[in-house]
Length: 349
Image (cartoon, rainbow, N blue to C red; front, side, top):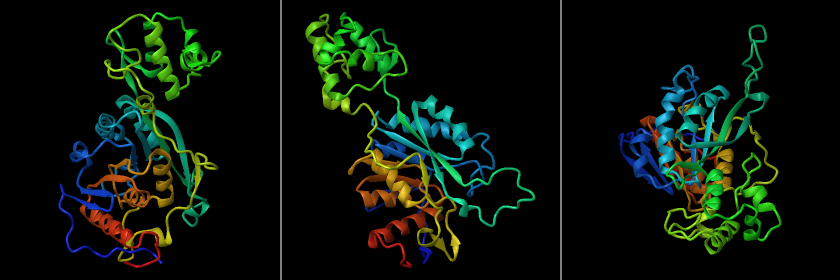
C-alpha cells in the first residue's frame, strides 16, 4: 500500500520549527536558520535542479549557480574539514553549480550516479519524436570542506602547501621527515611531495612530525604544525582535519535503485506530495558513510524530510528546513508517523 498523509489542521507558520525525534524541522528558508544550527558533519543538499521539477524550481539552469552561491558560502562558514557535502542534481545542473561550490571553499571528491532503471521511462517515450537516449539518472556529487592554513608570512595555504612550508620553516632537510615518521622514504614521497600523488598524513605520523621538528628544528615561539599557532599539534586534533568515511564494501559510485513508488511514496488524496522524494535507502547510505551516531546533519531543503527520517533511524541529529508550508506539514506528519512505526512503511496513516 502507498504511505498516505492526512491533511494537517494547520500548516506550520513560516519562521517556526519543531523537534520530532532527533530532527528539528523548520518552516521557511534555510538561510533564516543556518546561524542557529550547530556545526554539521554532513550536509545533504537536494534543492533546485532547474527542470521545473516542483513549484519554484526554474525551467532551466540559467542563474542556478548564482542562486546557490549564498547557500554554499553559508554551508562552508558553518563547516569544518570533517564536513562532507552531498549535492544532488542533474548532470548539467551540478556542473553549472560546481564553480560556485568550489569558490565557496568546497573541494570536489567524486560523483555518484543514481540509476533508476529502464522502468523509470517505460511508457513515457515516443520513439518517433525523441532525439536522444531516455534519461533515468540523477547525480550526487561529494565535496569536502577545504582546509586552509595561515603561512608564516600571512598567506593562505592549502594543506599540502602548508605541510611542506611548516617543515621547511624548521630548517630541517626534507629527507628527515622519514626519520621523524620511522619509515624509509614514505613520508617524503607521500606527505611532502609537490605532485598529485600527495597523501593525507595519518594522525600518528603528524604528531611524530610535530614532535621531531620541535626537538630538532630551529627554536621558535610558534609550535610547528600548530593548528591555532599557539599549542603543539596532537594526533586527536589532526584526525579531525579531513572528512569522516565509514567504508561500505561492495558499493560503487553507481546506485542501481528503482525510483520511489508503492509503499515508500508519500501521497495525499491520491496525489504525490513531492515529485523529488529520494529513496530512504540511498539517504541512509550517505549518512552512514559520512557521519557517526550523534553527529549533526543538515538538509537545507527538507522536502518530505527523508534526511530527517534517516537521521532518526540512525541516531544522527538533523536540522532541516522546508520553505513550502504544505510540504513542511506533510514532512512533519511523516516524521511523527515514522517514529510511531519506525520500520513499517505499509500502514496507512
